Amino acid sequence: MKFRRKWGTYGTGDGELAYPTGIDLSAIEAFVADAANNRIEVFTLKGQYQRKWGSYGTGPGQFDRPVGIDIYNSKTYVTDQGNNRIQVFDLAGNYLNEWGGSGTLPGQFDNPAGLDVFDDKVYVADVLNSRIQVFDLIGTFLREWGSLGSLPGEFDLPTGLAVYGGEVYITDLENYRIQIFNLLGNFQRKWGTQGTGDGEFDWPTGIAAHKHKIFVTDSNNNRVQVFDTLGNFVEKFGTIGPGDGEFLWPLLLNARAGLIYIADYGNNRIQAFGGAKIQYLPIMGIG
Image (cartoon, rainbow, N blue to C red):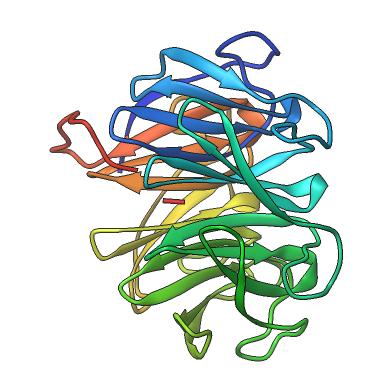
């Protein structure tokens, strides 16, 4: 993958970012979870600032560290991590709905992070509860799976997830692996171990699926690794640094139409990558 574009610098002004965590895409815009600024910022696909919403707080439309973001059917779904809830907005940022609350019961959260909306269901990585929760579009609890541990089907900080090909791909951060389940939560397979080599991880966080490839942000190794859907290593890109194509703790990412957009957390920017024959066409927006 080759570096294609970037935008963002540290700050609180319009178009500036303070430790961005997640990104998703509509047909014409990029929506960024600007975590430390407690807001969502919207850009064109080339990084031109458009609008923002949100501020610090507990009220409707306010945030305490927004992390995951997903665009689905002209709505924006956001994990409001510090408030342990999901908030829903239209694409203009108008508040629509929320659900959650702190706790361990079904429908409650402890530091939710990545989410993906697929087939009218909202899949959420409930990090400190070591589980995945699934809801309908208005927040009705449907099912959950996972518990703390290192066996297949168990988690130690599930952080990112992507639904693809009838399966759910999950970054199991402190088990240094990817786990795959069917849509009902039945374990299918896994790959990865701790390390710096190809196919090894040091804190995998974000995950996206696109064109039969799985993209994983390997945060402490400051790179993105690419696999096929069975876990076979394909390629990697990135190293530590502030330059083009370098990272300082890459987090959640998204992939559409041959472009990979990554929240480069420590460099306070978004970077986009693509193959050698990429054309910049309007793209549709994962979470």
